[in-house]
Image (cartoon, rainbow, N blue to C red; front, side, top):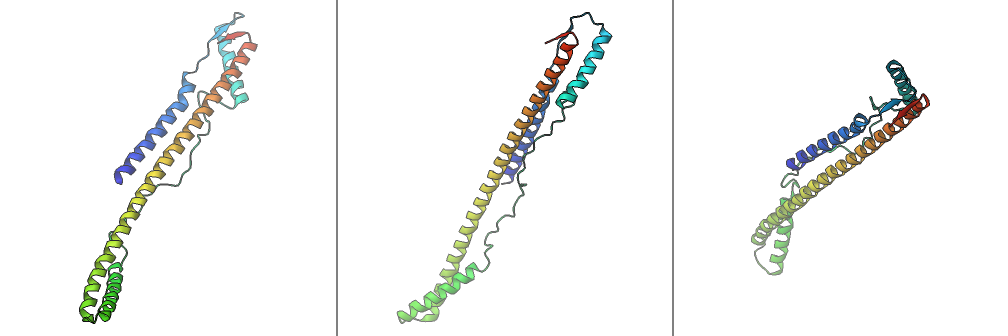
Length: 195
């Protein structure tokens, strides 16, 4: 079970890092090619680019050099390792089985006119073994169900984080696209060809 939790933690970390890297790759790789159509000087180009950069940020609320899009975080309940189910943790199961077996043995001996104390002792021994066996079976089933529930929780958390990373990436892509449209409109209005 520790292996499952470690593997799941590594998987979540890898998903988070890959989503983080994808979010910023769009902003870093986007580029504008600007050509002065009216013979603007290099200094004028730099001033115009800077003023259009500031204007595009104000218009879109997005800066591709510093994407501050709120990262979407999927909330899931924290996965905590639960207490292992102890073998025979149902205390008294053997004693209850012994008492039930002793009573059954005494009743059977009474009906058959046998010695009740021997029958009760035999019934108690058989009942104790049966009670402990049932307790162990229940504990094993509980441990298996617990492991399955934890594995499902880890998978759900990984899926939710992947979806959140995808939403963040989409928001950054849209922000970048909107920024470059605004910047292009500004530069074109100032007499530049932008591609």
